[in-house]
Every structure is written in structure tokens, then in C-alpha cells.
Amino acid sequence: MKKYLLDLTVKENMRLRRDCNLLKLTAAMALPEMQPGQFVEVRVDGSPGTFLRRPISIHYVDRELNELWLLIRQVGEGTRWMAKAVAGDTVNVLLPLGKGFTIPLRSRRTKLLLVGGGVGVAPLLYLGDRLRQTGFAPVFLLGARTREDLLQLDAFRKRGSVHVATEDGSQGEKGLVTDHSLLRNRRFNWLYCCGPKPMMAALDRYAQQTGSLCEVSLENTMACGIGACLCCVERTRTGHACVCTEGPVFPAGRMEWTR
Image 1: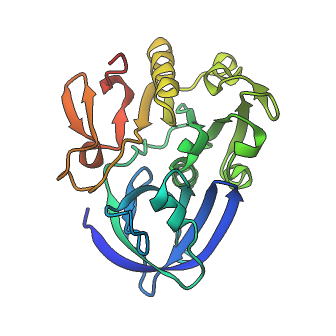
Image 2: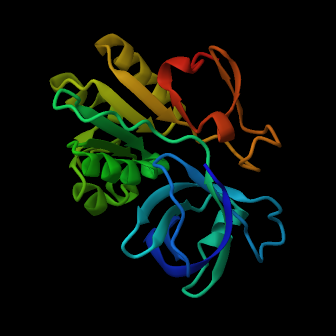
């Protein structure tokens, strides 16, 4: 897929919680085609200590409004500067990058579950929207530490049924998302997930036990996004993989979770 280096304009910057923003970007031209699970590399202008671009998952693409949505969690100087953007600012973005999720052929027998932990929910909104447009009825299972850490629930509810787990029990079931009763009471034959590695490893085991297909989206640091710097390399059962070019989406069974 062709890559583009674009100057996008900030249309809106919404504070979702104290350390997380929803950045909506637009362009004078029509945004290029992007697949769920792909990511972008954002140049951080104005931050003297930030020299490399920051990889951000594609949260959603609104074709009618010509908007690209990015979910920004403030974890360092670069993302803190991005969170300060205001309407009218210009943001330089390299996109689309990486390999996205697989969209299966339409079948009434295919039951899909999309599992996200924390900010790992980011790539699942666009994926859920694409699956719904394809004719599926996606089910979301979203986890966080507290109800204040849950993100974009209303947006997810517009695209499928939503189940929630919080570690403190402040919303939904209490406990880890991987302990949710949904995984015991319903059968799914296709899983997509993004979040902490222990969560994805547990879902990989669940998929193996139930005979389900499972794809995971890794969140490794990807400084260049084109396979040049090799800082995102991940050990897999078939050797080392460059996450930014071979992923970030992988079949769960390929991952070497025990290392």
C-alpha cells in the first residue's frame, strides 16, 4: 500500500481523561485508504527533546467528514506536546503504515470478539466499524483499571454490543478482562485483541483451547515505521519479526509469549 507524507490540520482536540486526548485531523485532499490495525508516524514539532516521530494507532477514519482520529495517551514529552495541539495547527504525518487486521468473508457462523485493554482499545473502533459495514455483528470486550480509564464507550456502542471489566469493579464486571464471564458463556471463532502482552497471551491460550482464530496488535516502540531502525523487533516462533512492517498485527499463534 502506498505511503503518504501529509500535512494534516487539527480539527478538534478533545480531552477524554487527564492523560488521554482524541485528536481529529483533516486535510484539503481526500484522505488516502487506510486499513484497521495500521498506524501512523507523527512528527512532533516544537518539542526540543523529541527527535523521532511517534507511532500512533489509527483509531478511526470518518470518510464523510474526511477525518483521521488518533487516540493520544500522554506517556512522554512527545505525546504531551501532541496533546497540546489546538484547532488549526498543522501536524505532519506519515501514513498508512504496517499490516492491519484480517477482515473475514461474511458468514453467519462467524462470531467475532474484539478485546481491548486500556489504551489498547484504540485500533478496535475502526476495525469494529469496518466489520459492521461488512455485515458482521461485532462484540467488544473492553477492560481498564477503573471506570475513569474506560475510553470511547459510546463510540463503541454505536458499532456493536459492549461488555466491560474494571479491576476495581467500578463499572462492568470486577477483575481482569480475560476473566470476564463472556468468555465462559459464549463461543467465538474469531478474536482480535490489543493491550498488555499478558492479556494477549491469555487470549491466545483461550483461542487455542476453543479452536478460535486470534489476531493480536502489538504496541512495540516503532521509531521509524518503515523497518530501518529495528527497534521494534519482536521474537516469534518463526524467528525475529520487525513489528512496524510485518505487523503490528500478527496471528497470535506466531508469538513467543514465554520469552
